[in-house]
Length: 169
Image 1 (cartoon, one colour):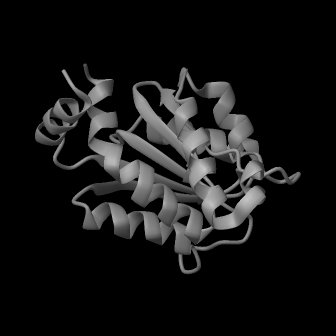
Image 2: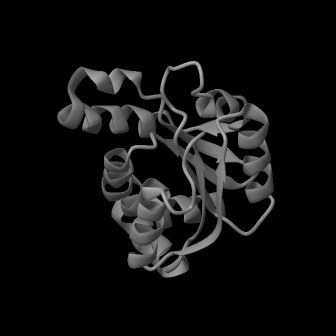
């Protein structure tokens, strides 16, 4: 079966995919979480549903708790935004990398390639990643609104149904 046939079958099987959103930030609130709101808006406009949403501090135990809580819920895909850089407080990648059962290295590679067109060599500092954990797709992207838009538009939404479908084959 070709990739196009896979995507068509996936779209027929999963017209609406259920997502959870985790914003990792020491400063954002629901009112100021533009990136989380952008993920929600773009996903819902594409016909998908948000089943969980949480803002957590950039603390390993809080990131881990959100991962476990949402992986045990109804989300097929969990999108983490924030905490993917190299500063001392950026810990999202470290927590998720320990838990991913199957890593999708192409996600981070392509994200950084696309980011390079927008931010130049600073793209090397992104530790965007994706993989699976307990039958759920985990995606981790930077917390800037521009990065969220890029990831949603170019990578996540074009493959969201296909990702959900592949988990159940």
